[in-house]
Image (cartoon, rainbow, N blue to C red):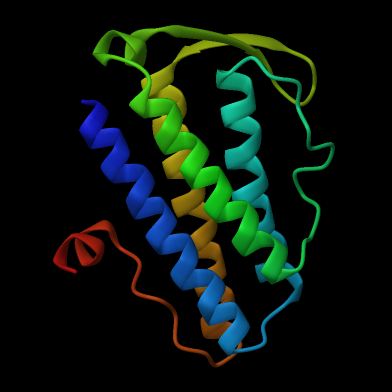
Length: 150
């Protein structure tokens, strides 16, 4: 199962990268940039929760410049992949205790959290593709099956 989640994280990286390239190429900012910023910042926050680290991001809706996002995105993906390389299969079922941004305490397994990170990203990438279309730009083909065809 670890390989499965590694594959999903690599897919997530691929899809986010395509979206960021499209935003740069089409000079799209505003809500689309806010959404891709939110995707990247959220994925950083979730790994900090998993690792029981202090949250370094105060506002996960902050809009960041695309070049900074690209760097954060690469570092975050590497951090997630490194973390997964250090656990065994049982680690995926480990309960992670964390607090959400409102300070409420929860516990979920690592596999549930990774699944959430991927689905959360997919949801917001779909919103960005809709915004691209509304701006007369070609949306990116970012389905998982397209990733697997490459």
